Length: 326
Image (cartoon, rainbow, N blue to C red; front, side, top):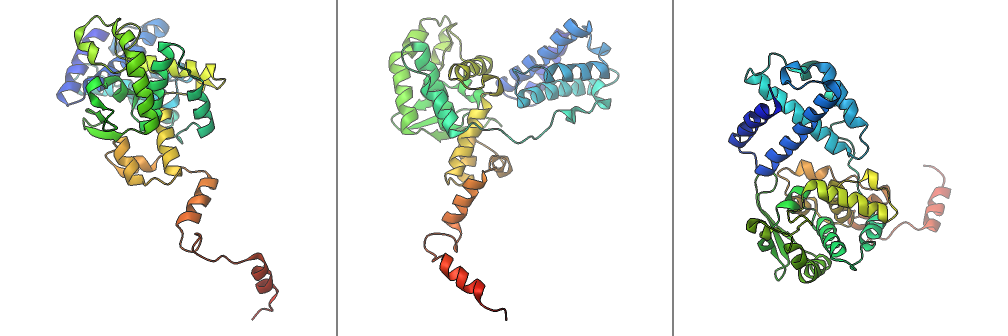
């Protein structure tokens, strides 16, 4: 069974299940990566020839790709697993090569990484406004860090979705196909204004198809900025800033947004709404605070630790310790 035949069958199945066009595209791209590897490294082109050794080989291949963050590697592995599960269920293959392979060797829930506040500032401030490319990228990453939008949501963003006068952005069909409204901070608003007034018009010159003119962020090829271009741009900009560009991916901006505002006292429920999580358990995964942050939160909110409570002084403690035991 050729890749093209599988692609058509699997995508039809995903569409019937109600998956968004962006999710279908992600499955397509990630599964295509597997079959490219299969042809180039295993010398196979038919899904019926795939065996457990090929799956293990692909895992090792992903592990050696330092440019891919852990979540990207895991996503590619699980997308391929879903494809073969579909093929077996519909009797397009006789056995599923994943059945005897432990894919948990790529951890399912590793502690999410965030970028420190100082490194985030260094990264953003290193992007000046001397060129239209700089202005676009600065506005892009200020928006991602300032709102926590997913990279897929950034790609779908239209000009009409951003309301600068009201200071908010409408996220259409986020994860779970749900719309939500996310507020814009003043700093983000100002960078978006600069982008719209000084740079976006120049990018419109590259757009050949009228329906693409609504895209908020546009590439030099006249297309919407997609996940691959955003990740490439982020890694490049991090490296230019003198930081480790190999270890970052766009999702870390979303995670850093959540982590930093939670550490500064934002409520988990409020962050849940801004991130578009359907379950609060998903948001709690962002709450691995540093000990310093936890101490500050304890000091602020515990009734016997905050500023309203008179603490035991060192002298009083010494006096009590010197008293004979009862």
